[in-house]
Amino acid sequence: MLKIGVRLPRQFEDSGDYLADARAMESAGADSLWLDDEGYDPWLLLAGMATVTSRIRLIVPISSAERRDPEHLGVRVATLSRLSRGRTALAVTGIAESTTGVDAVLELARRFQCCVILEAAGDRRAGLADGLVGFDESPARFRAAVEPVARFREREKLTSPFELWAAIKTPDDREAWRRLRREYEDAGATGIIVPLDPRLLDLLRNGDEEEDRSDLGLAQG
Image (cartoon, rainbow, N blue to C red):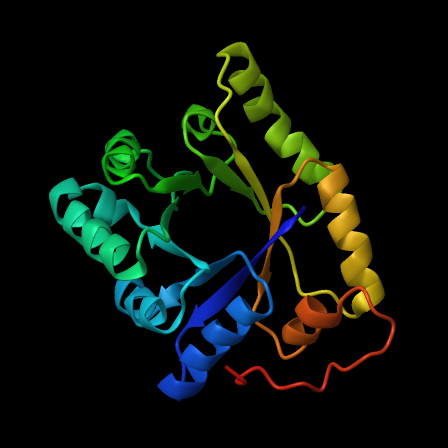
């Protein structure tokens, strides 16, 4: 079954509403919470979410600066993993600009039993991680982007579970939601990441129904 990840902004006006949105996404069945590239400290945001959720995975964006300081990064990973009771996963960003420290992050993640997802399909390390994110918003282009990694894993006889995430825009309606889920699953995706949007809660809860209730608010906890 296709997993659903939700990408939250890293800025907000009211912390209560922000954390309520995280709870609502968990209640609606989302697999994981991801964060935008810029805004407030992601570790503090996810630590807050860890205290108000119990099941949903928390995906930490690991920057190139953090990769250069694995000792400090290890303390942060250990802390969030303990707060979340093992629900932490690492999304390594900025690989297109610099691959420095990626191997150290992979080693660190193994020590703390964290999943590592690379946000770059072209790097050979994608096949050695636990998953990757493809940003092409076409199922055909997504398939083309991830096929080299699939071939690498097959050649190296890597049989561990591997996640293939497609980052997409929020669909306009339920029909588009059903179609995109089917097309990306057919293209090999194991999950799709969609931005937080007022329509998303309805799509998660009622996406396979015909009636439109897109006026539902997000901050319902």
